[in-house]
Length: 427
RNA sequence: GGUGGAGUCGCCUAGUGGCCGAGGGCGCGCGCCUCGAAAGCGCGUGAGGGGGCAACCCCUCCGUGGGUUCAAAUCCCACCUCCACCGCCA
View 1: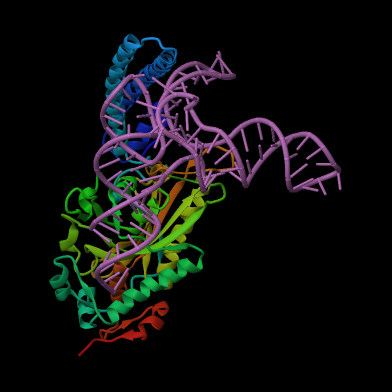
View 2 (view 1 turned 30 degrees about the horizontal axis):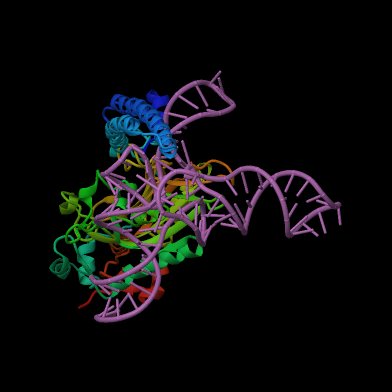
């Protein structure tokens, strides 16, 4: 959520910034709603002040035995007026709130204008492996190596699900274990959050109302509260400090968590993305930081570096892209994607998205901190980065590391867990 | 799932319609005292919003949302959360 005071004081600046990621921006309705709200607030408050006086008077008169019937009648009339005025104010506040909730974050100056085509590759690591004449894609490799059972996965969960089996499950789990250990050793706080979150958490994280269709909702029988399956651990970790004021000295808070991520992926690219590149459920380790604004820049660099380091330790060829304003998600100011090479698709696929939200998420979720004891509060800055999405790494690993005989070299950090250096086809 | 109890200013707590627009204690901050400290004494101690150049004024918040009333922390309704016991269960 953007700061209404900023919009009010410098609408041109806000408008220009937003045009980077929106076709048209009309702040008129926002400014009108704001003006109306402030006018009504003034009226309601002075009326309420008046009512307090009257009620006090009546109390005194009654105590001294005077008849107060007339005064009560007048006060009741004022009360009715206040009820009406309050209704108008509530309406105006809702209008303003709804309008504000719809505005995306202001992109950073460094974020290129435009969509996907304007993304800038800022780093490339490693090289495309030479896979000979007939490289196999990960579906073929995972099947022949017995890592993933696609058919039975669909039998269990329906279209968009797969089943890790044997060494495949071990490989996936070894990746998660490897990442968790890395973050844990680096001093990040390990969190294993609930996977079902309340609707409030969804609104705070910006999941709702706009992207409500992207997640799975769990409806309680009747009258109960609805909840939803988290689409990423980011949603959960952001909400850890929702509606809190962090005492001086708390920041930075660096956390990470592992959860499966559940996404409907309705009407998505599924058909182009065979195998396990995109599904309704995938595994991801997520890093998250709550920091003071002046530390945000360093924090983002740290997160990008950590994500890149993990891919490098696995020995996979990847690139890092600075996302254009329209390709980054709406609540972020600046986003870098770490994209791993998928040979069979001939493209780089995102395995981490490292983003700086500024105070946009914090404002929405009500997360403040106290810079110094006794000083006023301020909104924290939030950042997040995958570290990493494992379900896309497994395809990258088997494809990039495949050998002419159909075997696959296991990345060094995973060998102890998996128990072998090479995965060989089953006969 | 059932029954009972509870949610007040960082923490503990007082408070059953106007004297609570919230009292006390602890903690914390400042000051006095002291060579210094402790003790003691005094003062202060939340969040959000509106108006004003400013001094300053005003409004909201006693788990959340409704309701009754001239007036609600206090009465009524619903919900959320916590605690205790019972039942069930990984």
